[in-house]
Figure 1 (cartoon, one colour):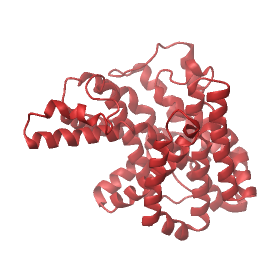
Figure 2 (spheres, rainbow, N blue to C red):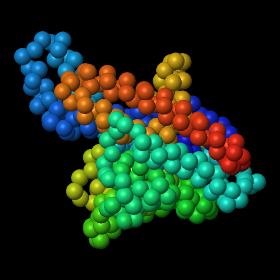
Figure 3 (cartoon, helix red, strand yellow):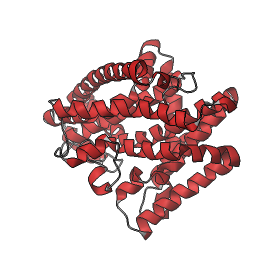
Figure 4 (cartoon, rainbow, N blue to C red):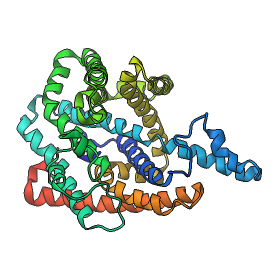
Amino acid sequence: MKGAAGKAGGVRFQWLDSVKGLAVLWIALYHCLLAYGSGQIPWPITIGSFGDYMRPAAKLSTLVKLGHAAAGIMAAIIQRGPQAVGVFILFSGFGLTYALVKRGPSRAPWTTWYRRRLTRLFPVYWVAHIIFLVSPFTVIQNHIDYRFLLSFLGDRVYPVEKMFFYLVPAWWFMGLLIELYIFYPLLYKLLERMGWTKYLVLCMVLSAASRYILNDVLQANGYYEMGGFFVCRLWEFAAGMVLGKLMAERADWTLQRLLSWKALLAGIFIYWLGLFFYQPNFLYFFSYGLTSLGLSVVMIHLAYLLDRLPGPGKALAKTGVYSYSIYLLHQPYVMYAGRIIRSAGMGAFLAIACSVTVLIVLGSISIEYTVNRAVDRFSFPAAGKA
């Protein structure tokens, strides 16, 4: 997301923007399907449940069966939308670290770094709150009460059972970003001191261990594990930091290996491994990191392919540039649309969901652009030099 680090050290990578564009569109379609899918389709659609989904079309023509199957496959993919959040976590670490490494020893003090980050993070977030106070055609999960002020100030963590999914559930990501920003200088210094291999292993161990302690030992609220406690998602963020460091120091070498067919196969395998590990035993504590890492590699390859299409490639990259505001603004509207079209078939759902998402993307781009221009011009002139 742009608020997390859309521009890396003065250089914008179209493939990075395209990955973020894919991720935020995936999440938006997921939330629309979530509102639509209650009682309409198996949840989730898996190899085992695909037969149940296809049963209503059993006596129809072959062409109709093929269309029904294609819609089911698309729905199954969209249902995995929450996995795209891990991609955002990874590329948040990438953008922040790439910018710092490229800036080198003369980089600004951490106080300046914090100011720049927060002036990109909070203004759009505040505007999103104000919009939902006055906007029609939305699905808002809770009543407006004292928690609105806490959320407005950035508290999405404490008390976790009341704040994590308050008002707009997707905003839990804001709390995770704030935690990661607070500890980022320490994380960056550890990366520089330990080297990327030892640092990544350390963060993998810390993430798995913290998930185990919270889940099995303390039996804490699952929201902490999801992102309320940043160490549980540190593996993904650290992987992005490592990738950012390697890209800043050896871009050609890194991209050559990242875009190889061996890396693609490895990404697919790691992603599958993460899905396989999602089960009720000790393997579960490694599932988030593996899924996010493998999916990120696969999506980088997909983004490079789509970037070869001039029109769609530029549109997708533009969406990624403004993915932060799209993420903040989309959920209440796509869920409203999903609820009112529950009587429609899957084909109609896909057409309407995509149309609504496009409108939200266009509106979000306009809002974030306007807010950032106002911040740069009137409040914090130096904030644009991130």
